[in-house]
Every structure is written in structure tokens, then in C-alpha cells.
Length: 260
Image (tube, rainbow, N blue to C red; front, top):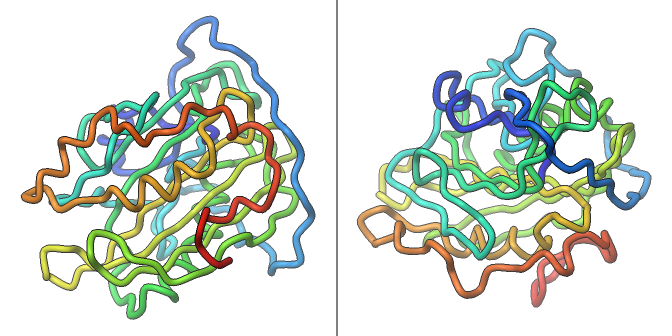
């Protein structure tokens, strides 16, 4: 995905997962993407102009609770699928850097995923995921990098399991004013260390030929591990997608073999 992504260094400094704002990295390709579909879902929450990432970036940006500050999760790791790379800490993986369509001074990513700590006071995984998805989408594909989201449609809303914990997944297909369009997803689950801490796995994928397939969202969630379980060994997983089916935007982005 995802559109813009704050590069790893900036993410670590601000603790915000906005996949987008970052220094221009030279002659990056200007791929465009396919279209999306209008939404009958409720409107997105208003973008906070003071929140980090509000000016651009698409990744796992934005935080629940409106503070604009995300705390990266510790003690868990994401798998590294084929074509992906791990960032400075195990709870974030990215792929496909390119120049953001809304401004040449920012770098974006075709795909990114990060695990952050959910806002304090969250109760159920379902409520946490549903409350997070709009804020995440707005920050990940912001006005500064993609011209703003013009419509969205929920394509997956289901119970699932992450790292052996009961979880809830919400996936949207969004239409951006400036292409590409994208899929964004929030998955909420309890920390596998038994602490009861609620976590959020946020993923964003561009809909473009060079973007990862939407099925990688399922593989990323399925591959989350507690660090003591050897989650760091997932680099270069054999089940990673090659992107061949990610750019078409066909279908509804549902999980293969799962009910939507």
C-alpha cells in the first residue's frame, strides 16, 4: 500500500504510523492504480490538521483516541513476505517505495503494516477495530498525499484469530481523489503475552500493478508471532505474494476461504 508512508526513522521518532511523509528519494516511479467503488458506509471522521501524518502518508498512520500518537507494540513481530522488508523494529514491514502522487517531497509505500497499542479503555476487539479503521484510513491516505478520500466501502468485517488470540478484522476499499485507490485494514487483538493489552494491526495496500496482492493482508495477520515464539524468523516467507494479483482491484478484497 499504501500509499504514503512515513519512513521508518520518522515513524520511530514520532511513533506515528503514517506511511507517507518522508524525504523524496529521487526518481521513484509514478504508478497509477485502478478505480474503486462508492460507499454506503458512514462518513469518515474529520481529519485532525494538528495530528502527525495529517499532511500526508499512508500506512498505519493515525492513532485511535484522536491524539495522533501511536505507540508501536513490543513483544510481537510481523512476518516478512516475499518482496517485503522489515523496518527498524519487528512490528512493522513495508514494500514498494515511490514518490507520493500529491507531492514530490514525500515518499510513499505500495504496502505497509504495523502493530500499535490500541487506545486505553478499549473493551472488545470488534469495537476497537471498527473505531480505528476510519481514523487510520484518513491518516494513511491523507489530503496532502492523495488528495483525500472521496468514498469508501467495507469489504470485510469478521471475527478471526491472530497469534492465537480472538481478533476482529475490518477492511475497507477506499477511493482517493488522486490515484491510486487502496485497501486499508484494522485488526484488533489482545497481546499474546497474556497481559490483556489490546493491539491493532494496521495494513494499507495501494491498488496498483506494482502493489502487493490483497491476500497478503491475510498472510500478515496469520503470521503475527510473539517474539519469544520465534516470530523474527519469518523473513522471506515462502507464502508471500508476488503482487501479480494485487493491482487489478478486482473483487471485494475478501479473504480467500473466509466469509465476508
